[in-house]
Structure formats: C-alpha cells, structure tokens
Amino acid sequence: MSDSQTSSPAKLPPGIAVCGRQDAELARRTHAESPHSYRTPFARDAARILHSKAFRRLAGKTQVFTRLPAESPSDHFRSRLTHTLEVTQIARTLAAALGLNTELAEALALVHDIGHPPFGHAGEQALDHALQAHGLRFDHNLHALRIVTWFEERYAAFRGLNLTLGVREGIVKHSRDYSAAAHPELAEYFLDQFPPLEAQLIDLADEIAYLTADLDDGLDSGILALPQVREAVPLFRGFHDAVLIQYPAAAPKLAVNEAIKRVLNALVTDLLNEVRARVAALGATTLADIRRAPHRLAALSPQLEAERAAAKDFLYDNLYNSPIMEDAHSHATQVVQSLFAALIADPAQLPEDHRAQIPTEGLARTVADYIAGMTDSYIEQAWLRCGGS
Ligand code: MG
Image (cartoon, rainbow, N blue to C red; front, side, top):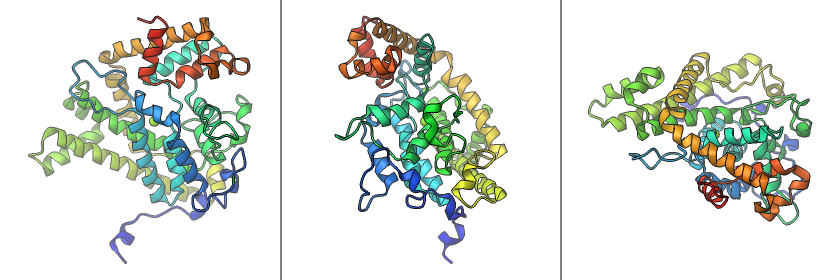
C-alpha cells in the first residue's frame, strides 16, 4: 500500500455525493438544454458563474475594508473576488476529501457572495434599512438568486444563466433555512429538507476562509496587533508558539503566515473529521439521509466551533466594528441611503433596463436591485452624479 493510500482519510459512502445522472432532478435546468458532450451540468454552471458580469464585479466590492485605512501599510487586502476564490479552494478540498461532487462544490463557492452589495456589511445593512421603510428587506441569498435567474443576460433564448436546480438550491440555502410558509416563491427548493453536503460545506468553507483571512488582513492593516490576537485567539496562539519554537529566527510576518496557515489546516481537518463522524453516527448512506437528517451535518467539532465563535467575536469587536472603521462605515451608509433616496425621488435616473422592472417589481425593489449590483467605485460615482458630497 502506498503512502497516499495509507494516509488518505476515509471518503463518505458514495450515495451521499450529488451525482449528475443519479440525481437527475438536481441537474435539471429551468429551460431544457442538450447535454454537453464532455462537461457535466455542474461544471457548466461553475463556468457560467465565472463568466458572468456579477462575478467580475466582485473584484470591485469590499470584503472588510471599505476604504484602505489612512496611511495603510498594505494594499493587498482581500476583495470579495479573492475571498470567493479562497472559499472555492477550500470547498474543493473539502468535497474531494469526502468523495463529494467537487464540481457542484466549486459552482456553489464561486456564486456564494455574488448577491452582496457594495461596501461590505455596512452597505448591506444600509440597503436593508432603506428597503424596510418600504416594507421590504434586502437578503443577499435571494438577491443572488435574482442575479442568476434574471439579471444576467448571456442567452438569446431566455434571461438568466439557466443554472441547474442543485446550484440554485445551494444559493437559496447558503447559511440559512427559509420556511415554506414565509417564502412560497421558493417552493421548488425542497424547503422542508436540508441541502446536500456539497452546499452545507460552503457555509463552513466561507467561515474558515474569512476568519483566517481577516486575522491576516487585520494584522497587515495595523488595526489588529499581534499580542492582542495571541491573547484573544488561543487557536492562533498555540500554532504561533509552535512556529516560534520550530523557526526561532523567522521574521515576525513569516511566523504569522505559518500560524494562520496552520489554523486554516486545523479547521479544515476538524471539519472533515466531524462530518465523517456525524454521517457515521447517523448511519447515512444516501443523499436522502442527509436531506432528512435531524440537523445540518456539516459542522466543526464542539471544541473548534467554540474557538471559531470566540475568534469571530474578537474580529467583530476589534476589526469589523473597530473605531478606525467607523468613518468608512458611516460614509458607506450615507452613500447608499442618499443614492437610494435620490433614485426613489427621481426614477428617471435609473437605466432603462432597470426602469422596465418597476411595473412588476415596484420602485423600491428596483432601486435596491440597481444599487446592489454596483461596485464600490461605481456607487461613489453614481452618488456624486446625484449631488452627493
Ligand atoms: Mg463569503
């Protein structure tokens, strides 16, 4: 037996993976298309997402830093695009290690943040508040679904990307479960069941990617200090100590990089082991077993989940909501709210294709759809054109 065979961890029972032929329903598209001679339905979906305009716009959307901190020592912070690619790398690793459908996992990872508005969390909150005054809410999963089913225009025969049901279900169920009573329009997405593991794993891949990346970017920005991270994030401290013993002469930034790399590996490994244990404990051997399990099966172990939650709380208090970020957040809120108000007051300023949506979607939703699609720099320009200052 070779090393790779002895060391490769167990895959899940093969019936659990989503398979294009076996699960024909999940490979179904809204508009029937001929099968491709050598590409699977989910690989085609990953490509459709990668080639979409909304995907390219992720390059201009904030992940954490709305504007670089004044006199920033670094200009290589994550954007939503690079974050998305990091999530995709982790998701493919997880799916491959468990014997799941890597192409479906890749498509879901590529699309998972496509519904986010400009200016990160602050922009999303401002848009949601603006909509609430009209009795509506902004939800980035549902906006992502609108992008792939309507706003993207690449086909002469229909609007949208005509993605498979499996990918659309994963979009709807990213990090939350909707009730069928509250969302009758989502009836085709099996709302009474959990999504396949390929979709469940995206939430965790997302958490792992941004936790480790934000420690990295937070330290690089100077907003977080190394002693502070060591004190508040024991998982980081343990690996950082080990690195300092192994490489006592390593430059401080290299020691941090080594430690963050190990944190990421520890979280991924723990997640793989926990999923295997939960699947085994349930005796699950088919996708139907995963769908009808008493809870989502993709999770970290209780110990690492507690460490992850503590690290996330630390990042909220000391990075995302730090006083240094306040100016950027209030600027984001002002730009989104005043542009929203200006467009509601004068819908003639909306582009023609958006104006055409008003009779069916209503003015407030149409304005929100337009704003949500913008990049950070585009919304700044639109705001200035509307008299913002
Ligand atoms: Mg994300």
